[in-house]
Amino acid sequence: MWGIAALSMAALALGCVNGGPLVRDLGPAAPVAQAQSEGVELTVYNQNLALVRDLRDLTLKVGVNEVKFTEVAALIDPTSVRFRSLTDPAGTSVLEQNYEYDVVGTSKLLQKYVDQEITVVTEDGTTYKGYLLSGAQDLILGSAPTGGAVSVVKLSTVREIKFPSLPEGLLTKPTLVWKIQAAKAGTHQSEVTYMTSGITWYANYVVMVNEKDDGLDLNGWVTLDNQSGATYTDARLKLIAGDVNVVTPAREERVYAVPTAVPAPYAGQKQFVEQAFFEYHLYTLQRPATIKDRQTKQIEFTSAAEITATKFYVYDGAQMGSWRYYSPVTDQGYGTQSNPKVYVMLEFVNSERNGLGIPLPKGVVRVYKENPAGGAEFIGEDEIDHTPKDERILLHLGDAFDLVGERKQTNFLRPGDRTIEESYEIKLRNHKDEDVEIRVVERMFRWSEWTILQASHEYEKKDSRTIEFRVKVPRDGEVTVTYTVRYRW
Image (cartoon, rainbow, N blue to C red; front, side, top):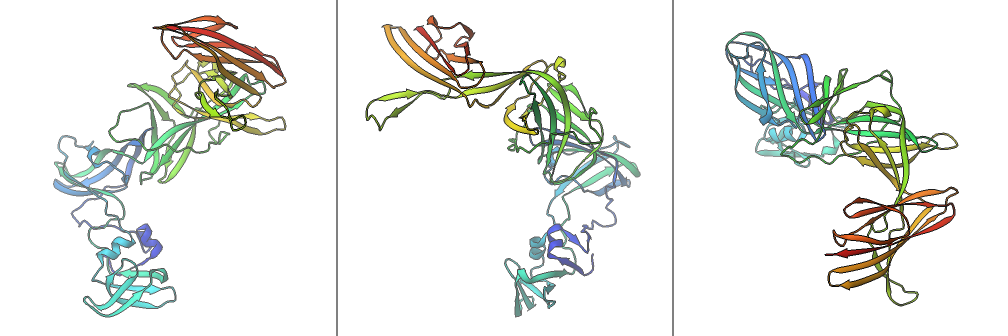
């Protein structure tokens, strides 16, 4: 076992002794998993889940070996571990596996040393030596295991605590401990795979709109968030995009700011190669990457310039639902007020012709536009779902400041027991210095069988319960749209 070891409070929190890692001694007959021989392969899902494939060399003897396998994720799922000797797959197998995660720390060391002798040094250099009676709040030291003369040392004044040795059962890091039956002695190249939570990825997109709002540049970024309790050095990184069914619920996704420029030395290079995999899409990074524990890493995975885009306006007066109000001014009656906002939309196609044409993983799209004085300004954001190639991407950026809509019901009749007729009036006001087109969406919500009896403007039937008017509104002008619909059931 270890000799006298001096542990500072900071070192205790980090699980270190004398500046080096604490190591649990499994005895001379316990071979240790050696350093990685071929590195780690990491496949990350966008659902707080990852698959780790680790290649290491193990030195085994013929018969039963006890082996400890360190450097595993703290959030490993022990039931998912699979061990295979690539050197002797038929003759080597795991008889028993234990996942030990009682990791050393200040509170655990103090718990283990109750009724045992320790040495405490305070900030002013005073040394106390005695049997630890309690370490729950302050340190209570007795001159004998049963008490005797008692000293109370405030934890806030402690600079150093000295323990005779590292107690049995404590580890410096989570460890898999195996009993391995080997038929062949020597070095075994071994493959270990397991699942872990605490690591996820998602896509973020940065869009720069041109001066005329009819084109844009796009950069797509992969954001990796590793909270799994392990560092993956020079890992071969793969990302799975798609909704994979898992039993445990996914962790809430966090959103991070995304750089607007491509970092050197990989600017202009294709870093990820995409391919179909089962019913999902697989993105493979073309270089090794180190993903540190408690690190957020961002890597560009796609970019395209001069993408053809369309900006347009949508007025959906009933979207928020009409609400009733009472007027304290007139002290009379009730009325209805519709949604006055006109939405600003941006649309483009994920096509090869547009410089894209690859499956785009779901993520947040942040949109910028260069202002006349120079520099980019943020103009809105939206979230897209997994989008296959050649599909349209529609972004809601916000509400138009200078466009206003007003919708009201002007008539309601029941000509028969199974018939309703109602009329609506939609006013559109444009306070801009230019003419605009506004798409007015109206929903036939009362019943599936309906007929438009009268309409002031041409309309298009979008589906079984939706029509759309495309209305030209002159600058500083107002246009009124009216229609009457009849329902039968």
